[in-house]
Length: 171
Ligand code: S3P
Image 1: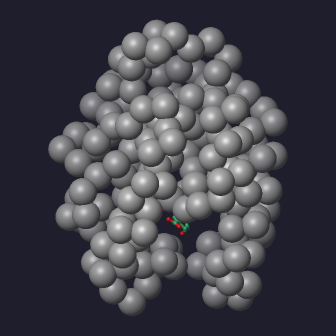
Image 2 (image 1 turned 120 degrees about the horizontal axis):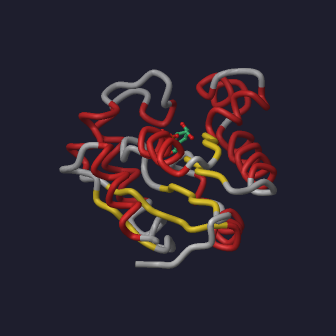
Image 3 (image 1 turned 90 degrees about the horizontal axis):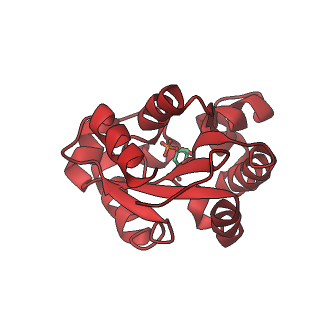
């Protein structure tokens, strides 16, 4: 168990399809902390959906926006923050998350991720062949989530069970 101050942010990281958004919602409900979804805040800031940002401005612009919005969100606390799967690609973001909260990584195997996300048109990185792209991203990001304070494998668990497990990890 880790002992966390009441006011601590809880930050969920992990690949797409590991359950971050759903679990964050449950945790916010259970803890009373404010729920924030980084992707949703990026959409608000950009004024258009994520696939459109990728299409019109490219991934690099999306990543810049992601870092700016993340830093802005983490000025507030206490939050339950669900991040996008690629928010950890910028090392500054990882440092900031560790500095500003309790970082929990969710992971899942490729088949589970594929089942959960399918051919999702709202996930531009999966466009044109979800399976190959997921496998490639998992390989590229093999170590990207290791900096978290703790990791939960969600492959065989329902979101409620994942949330309960995370609650048990701290007191
Ligand atoms: C991305 C994951 C997405 C979203 C964007 C890029 C990634 O968020 O931020 O499509 O690079 O893994 P989810 O992890 O919530 O799907």
